Length: 335
Image (cartoon, rainbow, N blue to C red; front, side):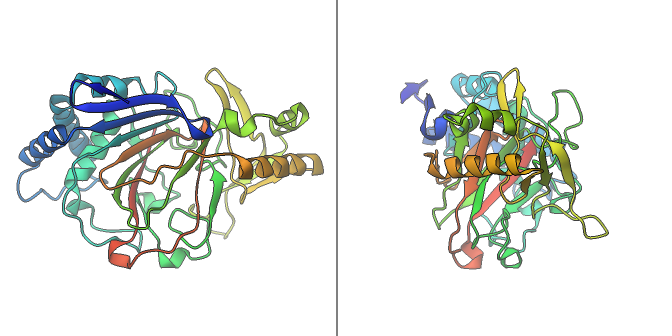
């Protein structure tokens, strides 16, 4: 770690899981100055700004406060994240606010969270990205509360807790997208999180695609690159009116791109369309089970973003804390 401007510690490394990590932490003085600027901009009490109606206003407030407060070194790191092809960026020691009880139903009152919403949306904007919602998940709302929802018991979902969420990418049942297009028909390129609570100390684990594939026989890599797989939507997606889930049929798990190999994968929803393809999936699954992971335990006031095309992630099963203080992350797609 090295000090920058006396107001930030930072490192850029290739760590566990082969993750290209940018790790930033604000000094307390910067955090406090940022909180004061946001409070001044939002007023007291906070205005009832809703992320699904007022996202542009919240982002504008956040960007203004962040640009005027963060050291140049931090702004440069944020601006370079997508350009430098990092897999994961963590920014720690951000301002917090008074929070209501964890909305374990999955949905809460967005207007109570103006400060952290302006932070999260402002950071997405500084990263040069656009936040967006999809109509097939989360009731079309922009920010998903990642919480242990009792109604998701037994499901491999971001609302689950008692079931391991094995290595996966989000929404792999959709074709890969390209820059400059409407991102909604494609898997999200980036997932962002703001951590509200994590008293259970649950890790969010990552492994880079290059490490995930390292050492696999060439014939397995070729099979995973063939259009011989069916990938269904995850449990978190809404089903069609006839009860069927959307699926991408005749697709590949791996796809080459200028930035490297891209991966679509969810062991629970991905199937080989022949015996050889199914065997290749088994070999990949067995290899992933042995791979070391980058496993940060997100703490309150941390922001995390990762590349959903170049990194797999998982969450192991855990016992939730009492519902009012249970684990609570705020997730927003960005592209």
